[in-house]
Image 1 (cartoon, one colour):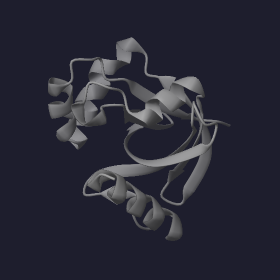
Image 2: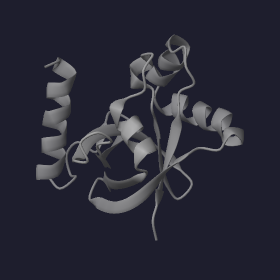
Image 3: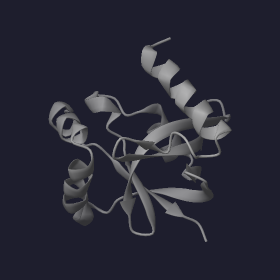
Image 4: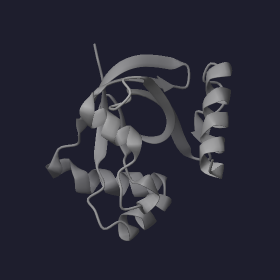
Length: 138
């Protein structure tokens, strides 16, 4: 198992056990716990994901650190867009929706201002990196 997988498991555990008091920020970057349903297994999957303010909730970048493949959590969201979100102590249900094309450029500028690593991922990737709005359900 990779070091990142171990880190992700520890992060998720700390986030949950502290009820969102620990792990909701990494430096200046907000982190949400996002629960998807596995597209192959049908089982719940939970992953900490860097997130950014957008409209009434948050947006996540499926950058996968600039790799050529989409992250598994993004593929799960495409198969089943109903997700659970925990932002700090706030837990809610959401629907994963692609950010409209006409809003992508301005949103990327905001994301890069918050998280400079995303600029490197954009440059490295040879694919269009999806931006996904986790639209809070009423």
